[in-house]
Amino acid sequence: MRVRATSSALLLVASLVLLVGGCDSDDPKQATKEEPDQAADVRFSGERIEGTIFFQAGKRDTDMDLYRVRGTLNNTKQLTRGGRISIMGGGGDVLAAANARVSGGDRLEQLNPASASPLPGRIIDASGQAPSVSPDGKIIYTVQQYKKDGGDAGATLYVAGRPGARRNLVYRARPGEQIDGTWGPEGKPTVLFRDKPTVLVLEGPSRERRLDLGTKVFGLDLSSQGDVLARGDGRVVILTREGQRRTFKSSWSPLAWSPDGRTILAIREHQLGLLSPKDGSVDPIGSVRGGRVNYAAWLANESGGES
Amino acid sequence: MVQRIGAAALVAGVVALMWPAAAAAKDSDTAGSAAVREGFSMATTFDEQDRPSFTPGPATSAVTEASGKVRSAKVATPARFEQNARTSEAYNCVNNRGRRGFTAYPPRARSMSTDALYIRFVYHYYKQNGARQLGPRNRRFATKQLEGCTTGGASARGGNKLRRVVTGMTMASRADRLIGQKWGRGKDKATAKANLSFAVPVRAVTITGSVDVHPEDTFTGSQGPDKQAPSLIDKYDYNQVNAFWEKGSPNIRFNGSTHFQGNVAHGLWELPQSQRTPAIYSYAQSLRKCAKIAYGCA
Image (cartoon, rainbow over all chains, first blue to last red; front, side, top):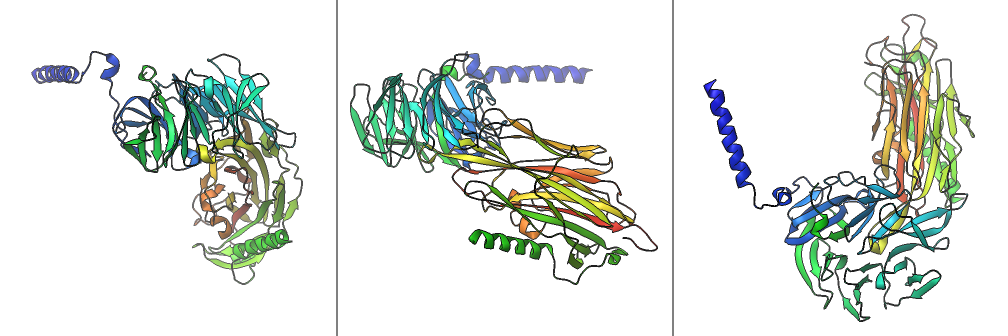
């Protein structure tokens, strides 16, 4: 009996010591520290970053997983295993992904960035593909259309607002045209054509403007400050909200704007870096091993609390 | 013409690989520890528009030792090939909806019937265009997905007992294309059943395959090579799906079944939309053994 009482007292003392010693902050959210995922398929390492970065990474394009970085790149958490995330994007406090894990084909879902297991998320469109998210959280995505015989009838572009809002058709491509939707100057929905250098800014119903960026554009991203980042073949073009254009030759591929719009997360083979939108210089911050990164979303920390 | 030569070469390949070099088998050779392995194969090729052509391989029969060594082999009674197989409740692969972008190809059935064995399998193939958009921004591409669903089985007669029935499929691609597989599994079930949610962008099409089997012993499946699969199929084992029924130890003479036994298998393969769809090879095999001591078997 005495032994049991002594053990209980020791356990209580040890628990108190652990509890007191384990708290770095009064903030209960800060008390929960994320452990680095030692068994992760793709391994990240590097410096501290502000906010929360979500990476879509893996060995094969068909089987990409979701990773989350909060704090330093050494503290990367693999959120899915055997995932089938096709394409993901983020902006504001919204994270969206075309996920094929359950349905086999792409299904557009809005994920909870604060959740420890964000997939499956809330379905935005059961046929939605290739999402891109604006800084104010609107999602533009494609839906493939088919002929009666199963052939290609062109893709359509939709914009979905806040959860529950109706989706709006903003563009209808011709059969055979391969298009992607994104966000361009002044937050306008913008169409990229995969097989031609045309960028079409959708100004309003039946009003379109061609945007010439002097290079074939693979991707366009709008920052929270209103600046537009265009990725070309070996080039990065910044179109400021004042209308200035800066073009840099770069071997780095931009991934995502920082939440404050001051820097750009970029990748070059296994290296991660921060690309300056002012002069195109890159400050290396870490590395990726065991796979590749196709997409990233960099969200502010307010949306990244653990649930 | 090139396609025809390719198909002929394919059939020749299937024959060569399913027919080990040895003298013609006699069913009376099944005395003692030997067993007879019988079955057929089929190659499904696709043109640029993904229209399928079906090339049936010959039915083969081989007498094998308990060790698995082939004692003799022959081309068996010609197997039937049903161009537009009518699928009854007993051989079912059913998609729960028809929609745009989704193609259900007419099913094909193969069967053979001798005094010693009846075996029949039905092969269903489906395709979904534009299932996913993949890749980084500078090389995005659409994918298409092919699903194969096969159901069927075999029964032994004339004093023979069935030991194993297996069916399988693989996509003849150098790349790992298999993204989903399922098979009926369990023990003591009257229906081997498996369903796989197929990749359809709007709503999942669920294809349910089922076959009625007598409730005894184990039916399950595997991904990868199978001991009874022709080597041409095993060459693409990373894309291969097998489903089988089997009865306990093969070394006990009277072990086996005289009832209809089989299984159902699903394979789902994904590849770039712009790429020509590689051939899908399929096969079915049974293993039977004579259970009579006197007079021999059929």
